[in-house]
Length: 93
Length: 167
Image (cartoon, rainbow over all chains, first blue to last red; front, side, top):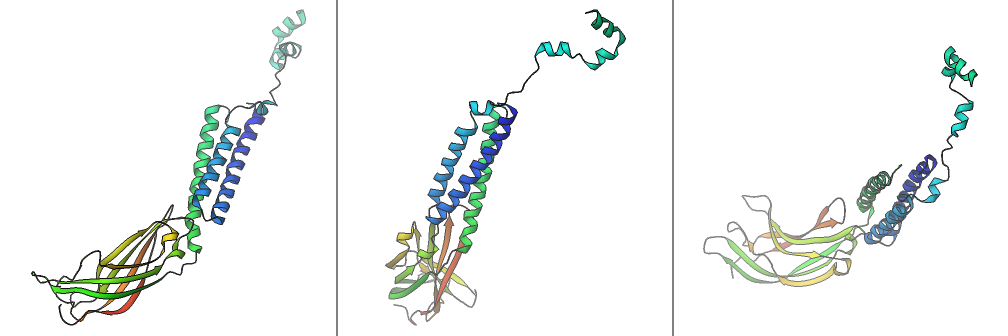
């Protein structure tokens, strides 16, 4: 799971659980059934588990773009440029 | 949130916290229910009224109990425990309470009832103060919720009296 995916999955989990909790309380109070409340909330928890716990491909759309190794050779570290000896080495190449 | 275990742990923690909130809300909502229970008790007959061989007065009586406790039931009520107590004053104690009958009411459908019964538990005074005694019959109830705070209340019905002589 990439960084963007981790951010999304955390928000998604909290939103899903809060919404299912609110719906459960309202529905249970309206139907005067505590059982309904518990069933709806349990359903919400199961749904949230299915959506947020497995590493779905959806969460891997923003992979980190690492530089190609050849790029590093084209842009050497600043220290390497400053040091006299290494500059020589570089120019020899 | 980078691994399966972290996500499962975060979900479990958050869902249980939310569950605790739901239970707290359910308990809190009980404060706003309209409660107007009613009860009426008649003494049909004094079956027996005697002094026991070791000096205590004992009464056996038949009660006709009519009660409507349906309004005590909310979405968060598991059951209601109700009991009838005889309450009277003696020179030694300002309040004597003797439980005569009790019942566990499991649901709203059974909360409106009428029973005619002799006292389930023996009505014995610790002494011999019951002749001609004025007493109250009190219907007490304890509301046991599914979650949260337990409530208790009562209806006091005054004006009952025992005969002046044993029989």
